[in-house]
Length: 199
Image (cartoon, rainbow, N blue to C red; front, side, top):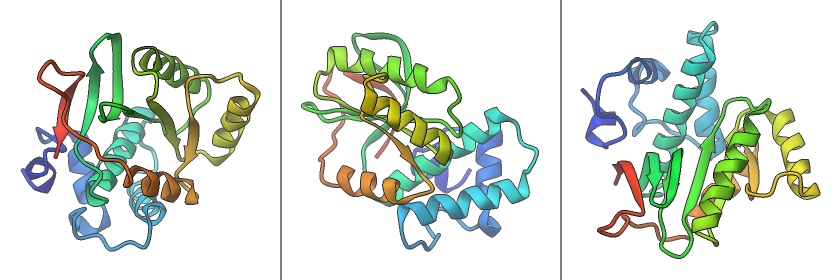
């Protein structure tokens, strides 16, 4: 199927995989040259919006997830789990979990927020109830909504999320740099996290 399957990022040839692999002149994500994480996201997102200007919110979200997953892989932030379920945190599927026994990290991926930051905040609260020292970030490509949500964090109106990261700015570069300083690992034999793991 291709490099996404070889890397473990996708198990099958979905619509999202087909779209993603067609971007940037069909160049694989391993071959893309970029200056910073922000630049990587911008290249892929702009290519996608030019090729698919009328795409649905669902497709937008799936492609954004693929961009972030491949960025983590390129930046050697591994292993990480996608569509992850965490033991003792029922009824929640996290977009991405980077597991570290003392401080797991969750990434909620939303192209736009509107009221969806509330869902991400509830998911963060649930994770912190089980893993007190976990870090929870909401990544978006909506600058205005990111700024508003970060104001809510400062005021205490959002209590679970540590930050809302605007992927159109150097905020994503800073987050990636911070994540590189953490050693992530596979969950123990009674898994704290299950899902598709990319190593």
